[in-house]
Length: 618
Image 1 (cartoon, rainbow, N blue to C red):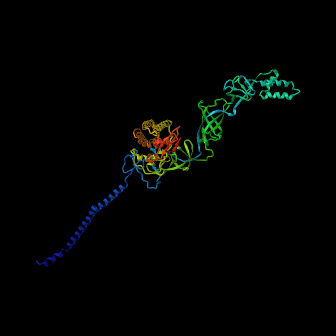
Image 2 (image 1 turned 90 degrees about the vertical axis):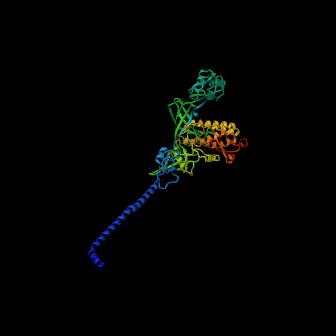
Image 3 (image 1 turned 90 degrees about the horizontal axis):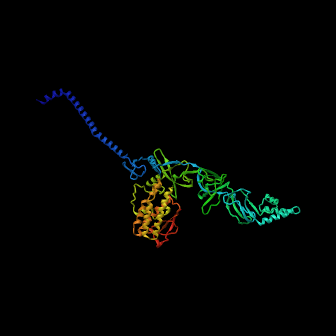
């Protein structure tokens, strides 16, 4: 079939069908492409977006990881919860604060403050006053103490007052005296009476002579009326009162004007109180003193200070403050001991800053407090140096360093200071701060580290030690420890190795006898500081055979013990802190002594007087 005949009619006749088919194909292909793109976007594009989103979320979560810290030791920071490596407390999440803070601040959470029992108080101005306690005794009023004398010379023929303490009434006879001079004077009076009309002056002179011997007009008139010579004439009491001293006996010869009795009027007495130098500025004339007497329980007396000694006694170092007290019932007797109190104000003082003693950390060289600042989120404390004024008993006057309205810690200050030390921030012992402490030291230190810590070459002025009020029982135990230390030191002075070893054992025993339960809080923590180092050194002294090894260990004991004596006190003893620059391989070494003279325990007889006194405790 010819091609032309075949194609012509077909193509021409089917043209509408071909166009319809092409349109359907295009629609199908277009739909397939759109569906493919949509599926591709769903599988691949959606997956990439989700992956990116997840990646970003993971990074965000990683950036927001929690840091855990200790409420008591904020220098501890760990990426996960657990226990504090220092105190064992549960760690808490660290609250980040992007605000600028003072690098000296110690920040504490409310939980930490509660656990450490930290309390604060707002500083205010007030008048300086305190209760001054005084001791004294009752004495007779010196103005009411009289000497009863014999008005005529002669022999004591009779005594009407026979013992000390007897009461005498003014004008009553206290003794009878035989006096030849008095007999002669009576004879002259009788003769002058006969010449009274012609020589009245002679009579008057004879009469006055008897009066000069303290005879009364009534006595003289009685002699004239009787016209008899009186061989014994009475001595009449010049005052009323109690005989405090009897100076004659029956038969004694006395001269005219000689004291035969001391008589005191006790209706008014003096109460003399001892005022120490430290309290003199608080005691003023006119202050009211309330006092009690041990022998009169339940009774209270009072009086105003009428006089204060202008001079301090050179031996006792006290001045006397005097009260004049009425004593109508004679309850107050001379030589009775009394205890008094004065609510005193500092003379001439204006209102000032007064803070509780518990707020002040005193090192001997510096006094510091911790000033509190608060925000909505946290509380922080900053150490501040203050200048102390007078001691008010339970508080101090602050002369410099604080202003009214500031808030300071008044309880738990040692805990704040400990946190500052651990964080390497300024603290009582380290005013400039230092490296943070990040772990717990169990005492496994080398001898070199020990020397650097306690310092055999550390001067006494560098040891800043707080003062603690401790029970008297603890002080006695500490004194016993010190006494044994002195015996050990003396044995080393004598270069006696065996004796020093035995004494070291006694020191250890005295150390074990100290009841640490008597110390509370900060005082207990200070006592425990470096105690193991001292015990280790003492064991070396007691066990080493070589004398030089004992002396090397002895280097460690002195500074530790001296710091404890400074902190807790040692009643009734004077301690000299002495130093030899050549000991301890020319590093220098300290020791304690009860005498100022140098007796070197590191060299003995070789260099017995090598050294000097660096400090002194009374």
